[in-house]
Length: 91
Picture 1 (cartoon, rainbow, N blue to C red):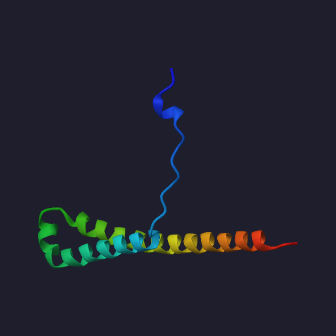
Picture 2: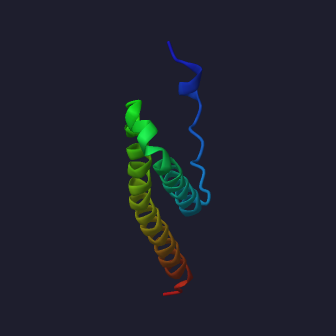
Picture 3: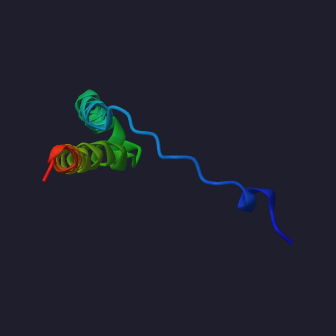
Protein backbone atom coordinates (compact mmCIF):
# COMPACT_ATOMS: atom_id res chain seq x y z
CA UNK A 1 0.00 0.00 0.00
CA UNK A 2 1.27 3.49 -0.87
CA UNK A 3 1.79 6.07 1.80
CA UNK A 4 0.55 9.62 1.27
CA UNK A 5 4.11 10.97 1.60
CA UNK A 6 5.21 8.83 -1.36
CA UNK A 7 2.67 10.52 -3.62
CA UNK A 8 3.95 14.04 -3.03
CA UNK A 9 6.94 15.63 -4.66
CA UNK A 10 9.72 16.68 -2.32
CA UNK A 11 9.98 20.44 -1.78
CA UNK A 12 13.00 22.35 -3.04
CA UNK A 13 15.76 22.76 -0.45
CA UNK A 14 15.83 26.05 1.39
CA UNK A 15 18.84 28.28 0.81
CA UNK A 16 19.61 30.94 3.35
CA UNK A 17 22.58 32.73 4.84
CA UNK A 18 24.54 29.50 5.30
CA UNK A 19 27.94 31.14 5.90
CA UNK A 20 26.47 33.48 8.52
CA UNK A 21 24.64 30.66 10.26
CA UNK A 22 27.73 28.47 10.51
CA UNK A 23 29.87 31.42 11.62
CA UNK A 24 27.36 32.33 14.32
CA UNK A 25 27.25 28.77 15.60
CA UNK A 26 31.04 28.57 15.66
CA UNK A 27 31.31 31.80 17.63
CA UNK A 28 28.72 30.47 20.08
CA UNK A 29 30.74 27.25 20.65
CA UNK A 30 33.91 29.25 21.34
CA UNK A 31 32.06 31.64 23.69
CA UNK A 32 30.69 28.67 25.62
CA UNK A 33 34.19 27.20 25.82
CA UNK A 34 35.67 30.44 27.16
CA UNK A 35 32.78 30.96 29.59
CA UNK A 36 33.36 27.52 31.15
CA UNK A 37 37.14 27.78 31.50
CA UNK A 38 37.07 29.72 34.81
CA UNK A 39 35.04 26.87 36.32
CA UNK A 40 37.38 24.10 35.18
CA UNK A 41 38.04 23.03 38.77
CA UNK A 42 34.35 22.54 39.50
CA UNK A 43 33.85 20.58 36.28
CA UNK A 44 36.89 18.46 37.10
CA UNK A 45 35.66 17.75 40.64
CA UNK A 46 32.28 16.60 39.36
CA UNK A 47 33.55 14.65 36.34
CA UNK A 48 32.09 17.03 33.77
CA UNK A 49 35.20 18.30 31.98
CA UNK A 50 33.88 16.73 28.79
CA UNK A 51 31.45 19.68 28.58
CA UNK A 52 34.38 22.06 28.15
CA UNK A 53 36.12 19.90 25.57
CA UNK A 54 32.87 19.38 23.68
CA UNK A 55 32.55 23.15 23.25
CA UNK A 56 36.15 23.36 22.03
CA UNK A 57 35.53 20.52 19.57
CA UNK A 58 32.35 22.24 18.37
CA UNK A 59 34.31 25.44 17.73
CA UNK A 60 37.04 23.55 15.90
CA UNK A 61 34.56 21.68 13.72
CA UNK A 62 32.78 24.97 13.14
CA UNK A 63 35.99 26.43 11.68
CA UNK A 64 36.08 23.51 9.28
CA UNK A 65 32.42 24.14 8.49
CA UNK A 66 33.06 27.82 7.75
CA UNK A 67 35.82 26.87 5.32
CA UNK A 68 33.55 24.32 3.64
CA UNK A 69 30.47 26.53 3.23
CA UNK A 70 32.54 29.46 1.93
CA UNK A 71 34.06 27.21 -0.74
CA UNK A 72 30.62 25.80 -1.55
CA UNK A 73 29.09 29.27 -1.81
CA UNK A 74 31.90 30.42 -4.12
CA UNK A 75 31.45 27.34 -6.33
CA UNK A 76 27.70 27.94 -6.59
CA UNK A 77 28.30 31.57 -7.59
CA UNK A 78 30.94 30.55 -10.17
CA UNK A 79 28.56 28.00 -11.67
CA UNK A 80 25.72 30.53 -11.84
CA UNK A 81 28.01 33.06 -13.55
CA UNK A 82 29.19 30.43 -16.06
CA UNK A 83 25.58 29.48 -16.85
CA UNK A 84 24.65 33.14 -17.39
CA UNK A 85 27.66 33.64 -19.66
CA UNK A 86 26.70 30.55 -21.67
CA UNK A 87 23.07 31.64 -21.94
CA UNK A 88 24.06 35.17 -23.05
CA UNK A 89 26.48 33.90 -25.71
CA UNK A 90 24.77 34.36 -29.11
CA UNK A 91 27.14 32.03 -30.94
